[in-house]
Every structure is written in C-alpha cells, then in structure tokens.
Length: 162
Image: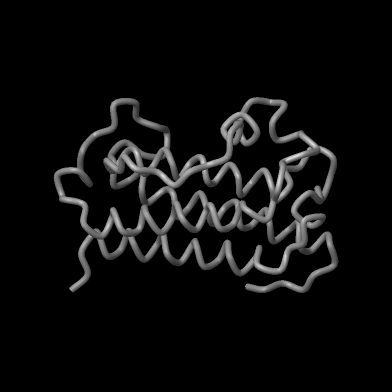
C-alpha cells in the first residue's frame, strides 16, 4: 500500500524525469533560445526551478543544501530583470544542480513524518497551505515549466518527446 510519502516522492521523481528528458540534449545556445521576445528561456527556467527546490528543502527541514555559484539567486530570481537577462553563466551546470536538489528533496520526503506533511505553512500560498501540499506542488510546478521547455524545443524545430 502506498503512503503519502511514496506518492509525493513518485510525483517528484516523475516530474524530474520529464524535465531531464526535455533538457538532456539542449545545447548552450538552445538554453538561451526564447520562442518569443518576452518568453523565458530554458536557462532561466531551470535556474528558477533550482531556487524553488531550495525553498522546498527548507520547508521539509533540510539544512545542508547543495552548493550554488555566487550570484545564482540574483541571476535566477523572479525580479523583472532576471528572466530577461542575456547571460546566465555556464548553463551546463543547471540541470545537474536541479537534479542534486530534487534528489535531496525526494530522499527527505521519503522519510518525512506525517506531522510535518500535515504542518500548516506560516505563509499559505494560493495553491497550497501545508508542507505536503507545497511538496506536491513542486511536481506540478516542474511539469508546468517542462511544458514551456517543450515549446522552446518545438520552436527550435525539435520533434515532441512526450
């Protein structure tokens, strides 16, 4: 019988697999491609996902985070200028950084006590109000951004992968 932990871990693993499938063959230039001038590029999307993973790790009580380069948080923030930037540094580090963070989150979720899963957040979000709901949303969030990367791939002339 599956537990809430198993289901959350599965959602996180499945959305990680989807993101990796869509990004594995992207070149550095592909990571910077925008399907239209105001759209996010894959570099900013994956960097943004790294930062949201860090928030989730904090929510589940993880204290030791994978290292990120200096200036990473500002470069991939949601401040209006960040997603519009032309330079995101070495984009080859982005997917491995996401995977390190996601793997750590999956491992933490597998062992998360029910009282933490059900714990209300100090600041509820419109889409979630408990730690477990926030973790579940991370799978949805990653899948939504994977859809954006799928569109980027299509505008680069790539065939659909899913």
